[in-house]
Length: 82
Image (cartoon, rainbow, N blue to C red):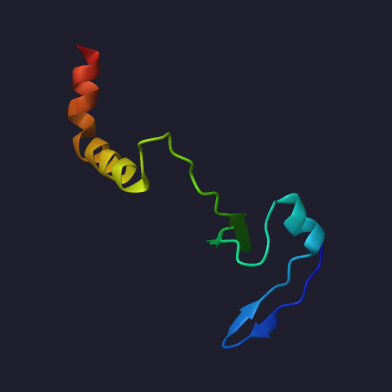
């Protein structure tokens, strides 16, 4: 599918066909991640999917747990061996 780069204010953009948006369950205002793959000279656009946490958990708690795991990963792995 070929598209042309267009001006959007001081930026540049590429329009996305409605049928593609519908297949990905995206609409105006949806968030996407844009990644540059320099090795293959391509731009990758992926939908941002909001994580749904179990009742009682929130993003801040999960973030703190992930930081703890990252900080103490070597010790946690040693404990798991015992």
